[in-house]
Amino acid sequence: MERARQLVTRGTTLLNVSTQSSKEMIVRYGQRDGAYTTARTVGEGTAILEYDFQVQRLNDTVASLSTTDQRQASSTLLLPLTREDVADTIATAFQHFDSYFPNVPGDRRVTLLVPHDDDDDDDLQKESLLTSPKPSLSSNLYCHVEQLPPPCSPPIIVEIRGKPRENPLAKSIDWINQRKELETSIHNSDVHEVVLSSSSTSVDGLPLAQAVEGTQTNVFVVTDDGVVRTAGEGVLEGTIRKLVLEECARQNIPIDISTPPEISNISTFSEMFLTSTSRLVLPVDEIRVPVESEAYAAASRSYPQQQHGVNTTSIIHSFKSSSSPLHRPITNRIMRGVNEALINDAVDVVSLSKNRLRRDMRAKIRQVENISEQSRRIAEHLVGMNEFVNANGVGIFLSMSSNEIDSGYVLSDLFHSDRYDVGVGGVYEEGEGEEWGRRRKRRKVYVPRVTDYEGKGTMDMLRVGGGWSEICGFKRNRWDIPEPSKKASARMENALRGESADGSAGGSAELDLDVLVVPCVAYDKIGRRCGHGGGFYDRFIEELQDKRERAGQKKAILIGVALDEQLVENVVSGRHDTVVDCVVSSSGGVLRGW
Image 1 (tube, rainbow, N blue to C red):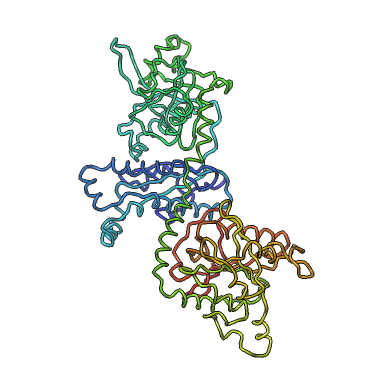
Image 2: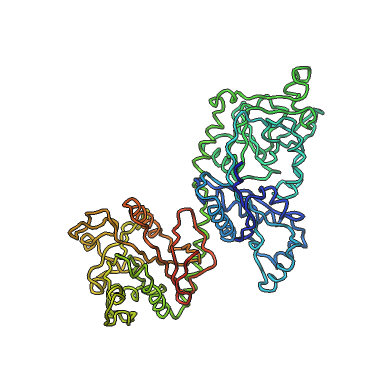
């Protein structure tokens, strides 16, 4: 049996893998009660649909579950979740997921939980209060990640039974426990969802009932007059429900949210669909109202004949859509519009988390006063590495004028020159023997030039043959980085095109860029990298490694360089982000072997 692909984190800490479903996580860690919400990715990436809506819902539910006294206390002790807090947690959970379940296709379901009370962590809470007067809820945010279930297969059948929730605006653990009875009471295994209904009587004493919402879905019906009807109040307003309402407005589809659909008019329902984070827009093929349901009497007003022998256990209303999707035109229009809107309403949590890291790290680096000294020590570690010494070609960045490691120390080694004002020095003393000759090896030097700023963000690595005199002729680009001009680059050897037998560029597929020194905003000790956000190095590295592999060569060695302040505990990464082979820092030397 295939292992369940799911895991649970608390903040950025992995708790367990494949031992709990999302519902089990909510019940286990929610303590007496707690707030939760369920989100999903779109486009098989790390973009969360209606992300800001989900963060707001979580904070609103936390507030609604608190008493007045508790709200007053939490306002002085706890900060609400920020979109960056939640992004850090989800992005790290995705990182764990990709590590345990590599190359798993499809979108993911994300369940977030903020426990109402966590007695097991009293000491942790006390310590948090001592160190910070207003700790964030993010320290107690749980996250469950799993693959989205496969689409439901028709016929889709719903059953109307059960009363509406007491607190419909809060997605809380209390509702998980309440709906167990409804889910286990379904007599037919082919029923997909239970729709909750209110019950009352008309002024004439006739039975009435209204379809409010499902146990996990919002409910919409289309009546014979072409109007879409759904509950406007007293329901948990899901993200897909919001998109449906927007699509109806955009497409001029009439919609009525003044009252929930009236079950006594069930015979006038021409279409019905459910919405949820996981199922998106799900067309319904059949409604059943069992005899024990509070809505049975109301449904019988539309189908009185079903009380007398045709079906003694349920009122059944079937839609023509069960035979052909052509019979649900309004639902199909809404489905197409929602599917087109999904990507536009999504936020990439990995990018959001990295943007906060970039902002924090740049502010931190601006305070570093010994960048020059750290750059010298980094160069001393780097130039002694066997991979660096034995390379045929080395690609290396040219530094910005400030707030970045000074690559000039390493370039002095590559150019066999100490003419750089603060060159490494002492490396090329006169001497004899194999060791001296090995360290005098002339290596090709490649530096970057951006080829596309506004589009995908691409760059070339071009060979510098003239040492410092050539680099001094480079003009600085928009990021204050020296680079060859477009005219000069046409004459320079391109690292991705190889070299012909006579030494001219562009002949053989053999690539001699063996080592690439990669800059960063931050690295962690596993070699995960946070760059400046343009994706230039990620795309270049992907193309370089692919071409070397197709040419039968080993992959190039990727060496990260980082100031001590740029080493962090964890850098969140996406599926396609580059991980370097080792990181060279000022005080830590060469970090490798993970």
